[in-house]
Image (cartoon, rainbow, N blue to C red; front, side):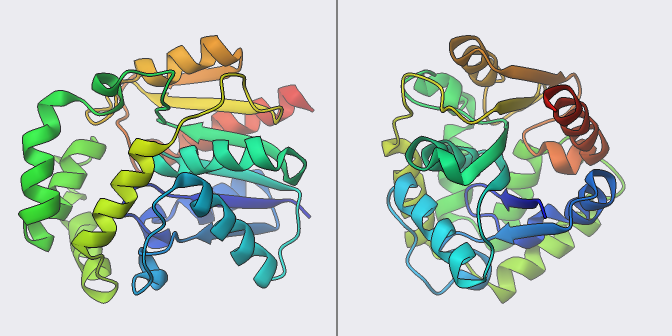
Length: 252
């Protein structure tokens, strides 16, 4: 049985995948899709967030062991989750069979002004640290998705506000997660686990050059979506699934 482990990014939780896990499972025909939350997010909102990406990876391993899911795993990870997947692959390559990284950025391979677009700094400081939940979620949607102007945007925001009310993330945990992302340094050489990079070329949060540069340095496959933003599974989950299906078929 193939277990696909899905990891989200900063301040996000398992429910932010929306319908994607169900759609992905139907297309990939995996028998086991596992969506994990990092401490401080989702159903782990009362926990203190880890201050290092490596500790986040260790927590994922512990959750899986506790729930009876045994390696090797396939991992699909977005943004901060992708950093965790890289740390996991570096430390425990035998535990992972395949890794798909979506719109990630990694020091020291990518400069800070590509890892987080400077034009977003003021809005992020106001919205994430000082803003209301409604303001924060609207900002996240605007920066991470091309759905912010779509008819579905209000429904998405209603769901996100509900998640934030039920499992509120503290400002302290937001800062702890930001610290973890800032401190992490990826290995110089690529992990030995097969890697696929997926990139939304309209990413308003992270410069797509981050993933493209990484694919060249690590000599791994990369696929680009011309219209999608940072949250690729939200913007075009069918495309994400198709790219992974083709990659798995070619790597078989």
